[in-house]
Length: 446
Ligand code: FNR
Image 1 (cartoon, protein in one colour):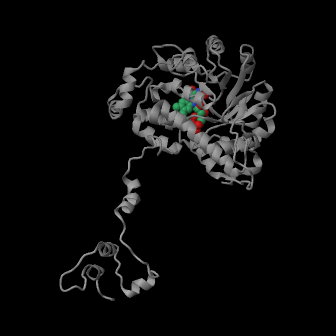
Image 2: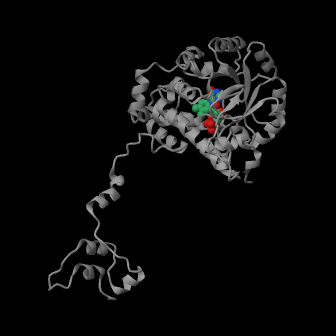
Image 3: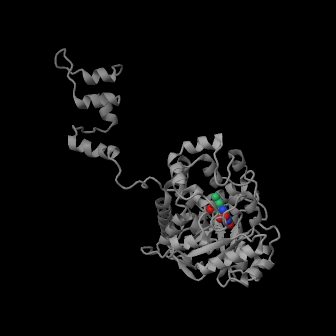
């Protein structure tokens, strides 16, 4: 009846003056409905019934039941790891990972470039079986992914380089130890004996010291030397200055507050071996030591010099131009990592994803091309390979995963990357890494 309130119509039955309340009527009143003829017409004569208790329980149960699928079940993306990492580490440490140089444009552009990827999938292909593996420098990898070098890793989580290297080994992908590692060349080899271990070299002002590193890496069974060439001087990372970050982290009023707020991180840091650059050796003056690590006079001739003392593969990391890439390939490098150091060196640098196709076309037959920077998912890996890279280097994502949950966190990340990559291949109608090509991918113009 128009003008009658829903509640009074539903709750007051016609049996005498006393109102009789039924559950159905209460439910109808709660949703502001009455069973007037008008309503019956608009709902098409819904025949209602009273639900059984068991049906109600089955309906609402999943909402209140504790999820039994494990602590990682709600971590699905690198952004999820990033958010957890932010909660679990002091701000100065998180910012050291997250940050980049100057306006951080290089970093942001490298990540954003993947938003412009457009896939053109095949359909009606049998994708019931997919082979995600590939070969990198002649060795089989379960995924076309390499964990790139990051210094200071025990500062992010006490598990450090060893935890990441073991997880990489379980996932069947190479791991690269940095010259600025907080785990020594030898200790990492002992802790991750079955991982394909690469060693990243900064050629030092003291060439004798660099030769010593090369010899130690060979002795400890590392297969590949990664020569990083985009650090003639350290980039200007303003976040670290604002946060007063020192190595090892020291206690000032500001950093103390940050660390006390993360008791788990602090407990781990205080109850495990003190942080040190284990390969470089102990030094009183850490910053002075770092300054001797980067030699601004490194040149193309140093590739020859390295070749004279290293029999394994040589990858040059930090290349951003075709002419340089041609020279480096001609100088005998086995691989070239197209990289702007995650935006941590020169800002406003070229975006790796945009550079890869032309470098792969010009050099792919001579040296392997890797994309380094901005990869945040298995679909990004698939795009990088389709554009011509042999493999994608990944760095910040494994650091976020490490900060979020130690070695288990990194294991979860490698599972996600693998599953995401395989699903992407299936959706593209492709069954092997080797079949990813330029035909199924393009980049939207900016
Ligand atoms: C790095 N990177 C780096 N590169 C290198 O050659 N030697 C090093 O010691 C380090 N250290 C390092 C520390 C941290 C905290 C980060 C985040 C990065 C650069 C790294 O290998 C890689 O080039 C970029 O980080 C790639 O970009 P994404 O994957 O982080 O987007």
